[in-house]
Picture 1 (cartoon, rainbow, N blue to C red):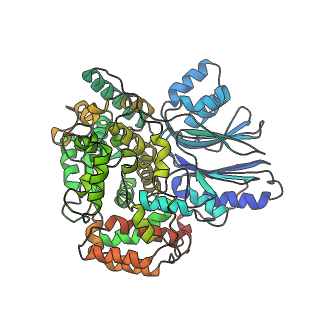
Picture 2: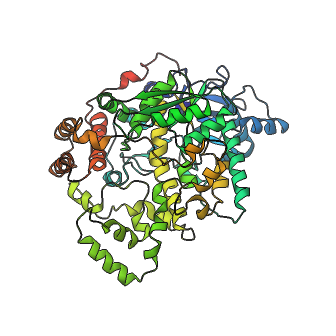
Picture 3: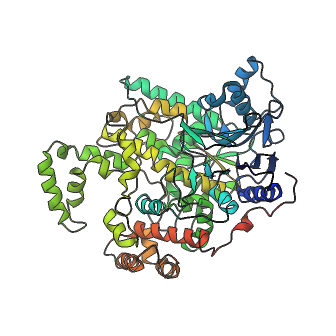
Length: 632
């Protein structure tokens, strides 16, 4: 596990010394991703930098790593869980290895089958391979986007990195702000991929690889697009398949030479991972976070679950004061603003877990794969309105629009008379287009939120509405929110997070489930609950989903009101936002007129991002390694 950077240029010879120092600085920016080791490679065309967090094979897994008499060089972030099996097959074909690392297996496999290497890998990964003979870079990102990949390309330069901040440091700033991405951020609470808030910096999308010759533009290809292909198999057979593939995935994800723990919320996802991991590591430690406010802590439920599973549970309670104190540093680690309040407690529990372990397992992905969000039950509740004539639906919608916000039945009518394509864009929808037109000084009506999801909906007309919602979340919410906060908040503390649900073999099984086996009128994740019967405690099987609940609504009315007000006043974003409208939302919220907490929080996180990356109010460079005197 590590972080990498790469720089390629046709003019590298002329700027060799300058770019050597740039490479060191870029690598130093991501020291937190790999505090155990640093490495560099340079030739007349490319510079590579690498930070390592030692998980397996400390001595022989150092990078950048070469293969085939130094023809190929790789920097790789991630873990390949089936590398032992792949290595054995390659050895049968006559390939030789000098290390026991999964990194060398990727290189050997690439030398054997070229770009098709990505089809054989089971794991989480972002990497680049430099072919000295062909003067070509090959790069790839894993199937679901567990590991990040940023890049910046001009006519004669190419930068890439595990984190955007490395590229920002190299090009001396964020560049031009992408105002369309800001529009989408205010809807989604994150910037949808492949865009970032910087026009010039992009993200390689999950399940994609690229090639780039020394003199030529990137050529990007998709090698994996998760979709749903329901089959009509017996229920009991599918239950057994889920049990088998999850056991296998957890076993694969436990491969490590360092201590492994797990996050535990007390819900079915994390409890399933812990229970299956305990079968292999009976003394696995679990970690939980919470708040003092009643109803906003999972600690008691987690402790009850841990006791039933006979595993240790360590917990941490977050106060409003430290919550706010750490927020700028948290936003710095994020690279891009993500306004999911749950990422903050994740930051704190990762900090505590790092005191005991180097790797943690977590339950991300179960909701998207097995139908876990309560919103997925909406098609059941709206089915009575689905078959009414369009003219009648339009009349009801017009009537509902005249009702005041919060009026009984208003939301139900609006949702039931609006097509799914317009109604559902993912697990979060913060500001409406009308609200954005009041908030943004340069609102553009053409940049509507449906622009992001329109292309996805065009490919899934054949699916049931529940699976359409899952598909949209996998391609937006999962990669834009869930996996971003999981990677950045754990890597902030040099802690490796592994997600056994997001395994391509697990997905293969989940993708064949029919919608009625995942979500019923009464229950989400129906078949997963059945598969976990007898494995996790009965008390957990039917427990409602909590996530990481955060008392933002209460805090913005009380403890954090003055802080929020002052942040809005001080923020140098008057050219972007109508602050009077934002202060109106804050006042409404404090007086209890409307719960505007998520809307306010979304703008506040952007303002902190603006302070960190645009106003330069904070300097977190001390968190990264000082420039080294090295020969690269």
